[in-house]
Length: 157
Image (tube, rainbow, N blue to C red):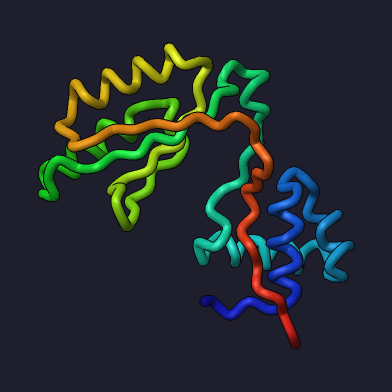
């Protein structure tokens, strides 16, 4: 892990909570000058710790309120198969997360969709493009917790 001090961790926590706040507002909260705070943020960006700053949307209000989790078992485990599968999945706009997993399932996809018919289109695309041993899906009935915040270590110094 990079050498992060308590001030860096507080800056990261503030940005995860609200990346739209000004550097001056953050600087005041972490007891730094605006310039010093700006330099820390830039250093964290250059180190690849801060990847980007985004707006979080209400999926339901933009017509993508159905969350589906798709579990895929690969038909084979070759690089060629994976490359084709990954390219296909990455090209599907409704796929918001794509993970290679351990255990019975090889891949887990998270989709944000308008409705079940939209999932059926994705399903048909997957099975029509890629040979899979199994494709299963479950949908979320209720979102009980969602965060984009990465847990930060406690700083003891």
